[in-house]
Image (cartoon, rainbow, N blue to C red; front, side):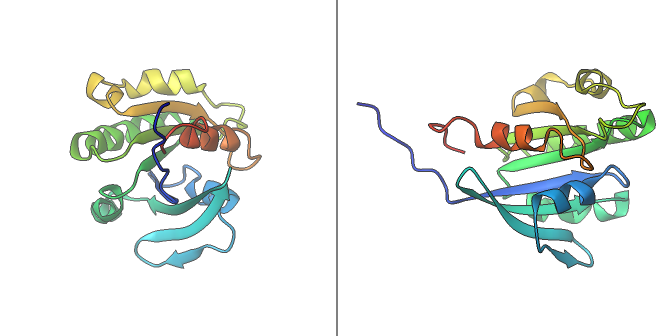
Length: 171
């Protein structure tokens, strides 16, 4: 008979990305009654499939990225939000993702959300993956690229299911 590993009661999730990629829209879809924090972003909690999530939304211009270390060192899940309807945004996000993967190895899962899939000019999650040139060191983390729309909610439940995983998984 196999032993069961106890699941942690709360999953710490940090959502990051450059300006105007839809982090706040996605955050608002996930978390009701969140609290704005002038410097750090937004925080709130949510429940999904019986698991509680502590969610932080953080990002924006380059000058605001250094304090992210406070969140990324302890977060089990990191979600990079990318505007898939803006090729320049995808390109700008690539460097941030690479830098992150070089500096932090703590998260158990990394998700790249190709947001704005409802936009007519959006590229597919696979095209985002190709543009990001995911390197071998990034693949060593549990990493996936998923499409979503913060406006319609499409893809959000799939992202959460990937995070929670099967019932017998430990995250």
